[in-house]
Image 1: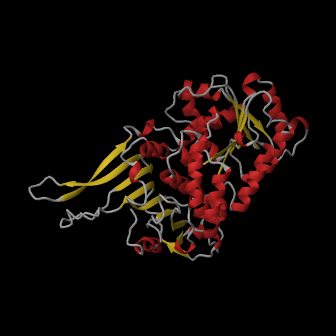
Image 2: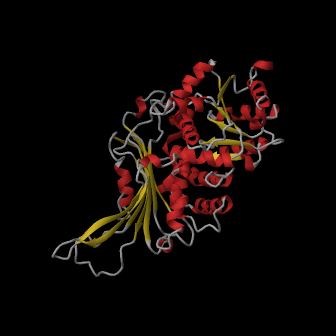
Length: 465
């Protein structure tokens, strides 16, 4: 891998400390970062070198050896200043950044900017990078990583894309949805297209319904200022759940390339049918008392919706998506429920009407499970449900999503990043649902969500898995 400099704008943010820095440390320990690579942390807070290194050290695993930590910390440098470029001369953040990069040789010819800041700072940051020539690719490559929220509706998503392309070319932009970096989501492609057993069954002739769930026990965890402006559907529905759906239902790509795989994801997202009358919004009891939440807020902390894919492969197959906070369980999964067999050889036996169910487990543990019916060991002929299950021997060996995606950005592979067409297709589906005024059903923390979400499925003769 070529040497480069990673510039993290917003190094003191929760995002950087919770996800980015641990992922970088893991890549470093696996020998996947060039030895001469520099990491420049940028934030407004004034910190001494020791204070900055202590801050970074606090994000690293407690069981890491001191020598490992010291080697990792030696890569770091810190620059403080205003992202808006408010200071002049040598005190200007971007002037200091340019001076550092110019003085650190070939490693700084290649630059990766990771924006761990609020999106409202993007215009000022991009303008300043351009003004100081920090986005040019004269001597090496320059790449930019950003992540959600990528707009708040179709109009703002298009405006963001226009802003991005004012300062960067498309091959420089890496739009991140970390669910595309999750091991089991990527394993979906392998499981579907490397095994002749499954591919012929993934269509409307064999599949009864699809369910995708992202459930969390925790509430909004002090994120009231952000969450109350966004809500559950924008926070995880528009991105994570739709991306999982696209990977689970896409057609066979022509090749394993960014262009081919992204093309098939876009086809699915562009074929989704919004059904504003088949949506349930909920809000957990107590949300209105959360810090920085309006006491009259109508923001949803839960949603459940039905859709379908309007193409020859999936037309008529109901797809159910749901996600929420303060629920009874924490888990994320993709469930494919197959149709019951048309032959009735065992219709006289209990469990004969149980469908086969294929489950991709994303969180908390990752793996794949397929439920089948077998004969129960007994003198009598009886059926029982069993699981054919794949799981990783040790969950600790699974690379975190941010490890996958950081490494991909470093080597210039955008396959598991989203592009503008995907983002716009997602918002084209979500906007009609958000536009229609919907009732908000209050549900108790620790419950599965509002009863109306159960009725959404029961009205079709189905139930949540």
